[in-house]
Image 1 (tube, helix red, strand yellow):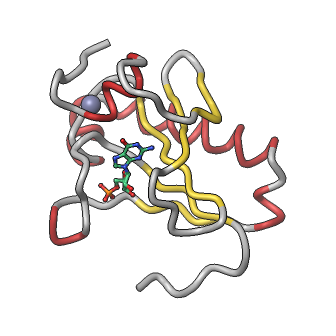
Image 2 (tube, rainbow, N blue to C red):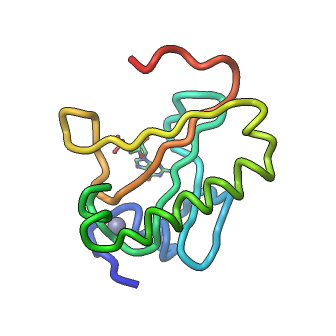
Length: 116
Ligand code: 5GP
Ligand code: ZN
């Protein structure tokens, strides 16, 4: 897997820094966001480093499917389809991206507020 030595999410993948993982397969991990914005706030990431969904789509479109397969499996197994959930991927600083390793926020729990 390609990693980036300065990337905090690559360090969570390698185990160099701890992350509370809730899902792990060949390609994808999910772990709890350190500053949760909802009752359940997870981050789904591919084990190979890209900076955002556009780079992922251009270089490795299959990885988008692999992440959504993981989201599908996790949400199916944890009754989240019934409870409801939201997926967000911020691209660029203006959108609020602060970690430049492609990631999908999964938010769930009590009724979620509006997108803003
Ligand atoms: P972004 O702001 O790039 O869309 O999302 C990055 C997310 O990563 C933020 O919600 C932030 O709380 C989370 N985050 C940043 N550093 C860490 C960390 O070291 N561990 C975990 N679990 N989450 C982190
Ligand atoms: Zn990375």
